Image (cartoon, rainbow, N blue to C red; front, side, top):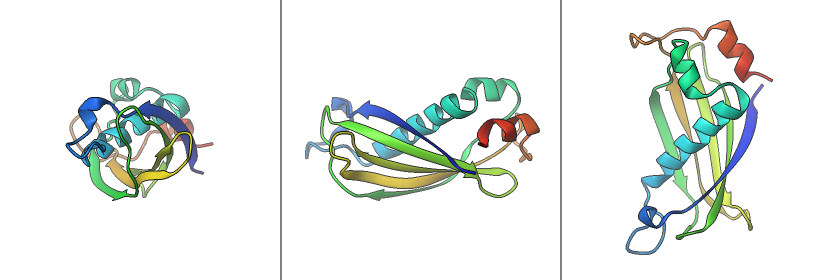
Length: 133
């Protein structure tokens, strides 16, 4: 069953463009923040997973840009994750303004589950136990 977490962040000045809104590539960085916090809250920190020999490289991403966000806006990232096949994780991310809940962006990323040698693996039982409800 999928698990959802939320994380807040503020748009930093360095993330804005000449038009005063966030630069489009920043959304993928925000997705990474959401994934990292999802792992920390529901399973274990990503650094611990790597120590145990499980890595999650990005293999696919999709972003829809739905609204503006400017410097110092507080955003909420709602992240839902679940297994996607035998050796992949899918993270669905929805970014909204924290106060108004008006949409900013949404999308997903898909990550292979690999070992340190870069070979796809089925997730170990401890991993499955950690990510499922």
